[in-house]
Image 1 (cartoon, rainbow, N blue to C red):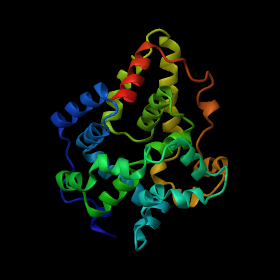
Image 2: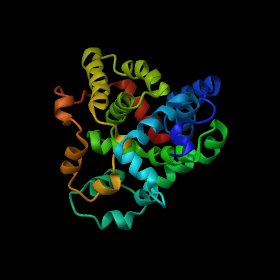
Image 3: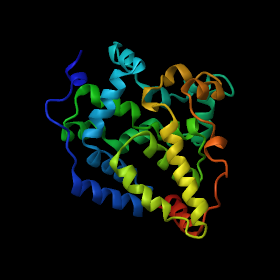
Length: 257
């Protein structure tokens, strides 16, 4: 058993001032992914260690940690030719369709914004924790596909709330009250949507412990059943609300900035 599975020598701590400032900048300029990652990891602190320990204790995680050489999910997600060779209707095909343009949301784009090696040195992550965080760094798009949230601004809000239900990251929990305020014209229906998205993530088995390499060639619905994710229509029986003027403004900021 490696030192990182046993635990790091010193508890991982939160950087409150930098984290909260970056979270505010992300809320006001949501297209700036660097602020998103800075807020996420500066405020994560011990959550990184707890999530890694949960991954290491899971059969899938334990098997991956024992592999030599270690898998590189990000390299696979950046390899469009390999993904394009996978069957029509597969999880991989849905991922490519979601990405759209050649550079839209690619693995390299996310990793460059995250600057994980620098963060590992700064926050004191072990090598195993860095590999784990790197594997999960661009899981946002995979969460969209697994859970069923589209690229529209309502889908983005939904997947943020979904992720907050999946992973107890402090910045995501802090964002939830803000998300609830984005649709004042239909407060009850919007509240239910955000609440149900959070519950949808909570009720889905940990996506950190998914063998994506095995599932990407499978038909999307088969992959979803293998994961055990609840159906979108069951999670959101009332569907997705119309976006209001505040969400229109957020969407324009993301598009134009």
